[in-house]
Amino acid sequence: MLGLNVPDLLALAFFIAAWAIYHVLIERGGENGVNRMIAQYRMGWMTQMSERDVRIVDASIMGSLQNGTAFFASTSLLAIGACATLLGSIDEMAKIAGDLPLGVATNRTVLELKIIGLLLIFGYAFFKFGWSYRLFNYAAILVGATPDARSEDARERARVAGRAGQMGVAAARHFTRGQRAFFFALAYLGWFLGPYVFMTMTSFVLLVMWRRQFASDARAALMWEPPEEKAKDDSAGPA
Image (cartoon, rainbow, N blue to C red; front, top):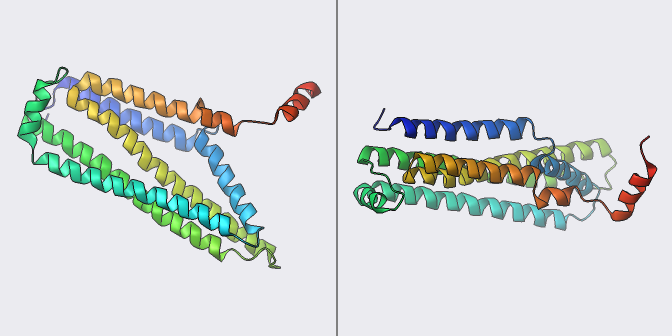
């Protein structure tokens, strides 16, 4: 099939399945993951923002989030350009790949397919980062549109602040998908060294991402409690 042998097809199927399953498990489950916890803090942030008269700090944070997203969007474009350049150097790549210690002999068609696949991954990442940047702009507008803390219409203030929080959560979700594409792109590079390296790197990236969500120091920081409060809970015993 298109010059790909059975190990290549199995490795590609494993890569796609790993990405799809991880995506579903994190976004439809993962209640104890870092992403879900931070989403709750985003909503809490907007609640606090709505009760402040001066929102300079909130505007500064929104600007930082937008700048970070713009950086990754620009990086995606550079990666797309690099992949397009590689398409014009297939013969040189085939020679280099064959000379590598773990390199496997491959033909021009297979190399073109692999590079096009990498190009699609970075293209997907760019769209996600670009849309995330736009959503952070929307969130910033909603922050600006949130009625003043001295406003008598508390219901409207809470409604707009909640919408700003939901918009921020959506922006972060698309940003995370773009970053996930970057991580899986690293795994995809293993395919140029062979299908077994491809599957090994995919497994490694999957393990690293899972650990960051459920067993990282970042999650431990989110679960941290003051020592005195922890001691009180332990001394109270079961209800």
